[in-house]
Length: 162
Image 1 (cartoon, rainbow, N blue to C red):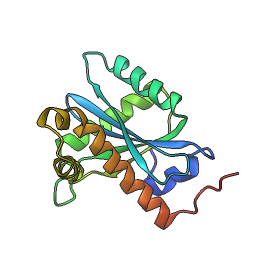
Image 2: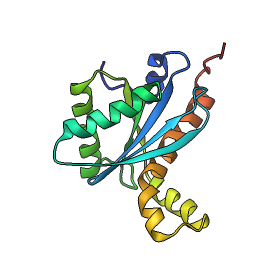
Image 3: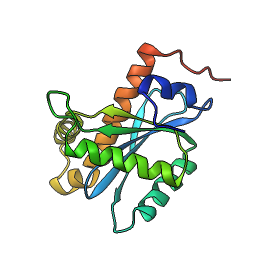
Image 4: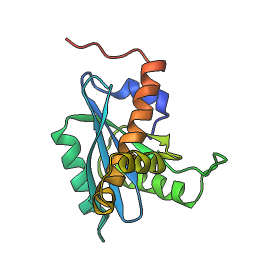
């Protein structure tokens, strides 16, 4: 399956599947997962990037399978003017490499300011510097995913629960 546009991704999601959000960094990948009703994003885990992409992909797909995820939203780091820069190209390459390992529906979502928003929330929660460092990437992934879930609420007909 090719990489979709955000408005097309919804059509690929099996009923009652969750969506995962990824915040792809150079050293780590933050993971967040939605509830089955596609309403709330929850930060799940921060994965360390090692030397082998296949090992990281295996960890990601294991998480997705355990949570019954049907689609992925990957944060696309655009600059403030909305143009893609080097980090955006790295996120696109990451997505292409993931789809080479397993055909999985995914789309990109503008992640401008997601890390800053996550940092503000964690500071307001009075987390220690060490704890903020441990959860910042998964929290940023939750912000990215929540942005997409809010978009779905406003633009797509929601799946009905049985």
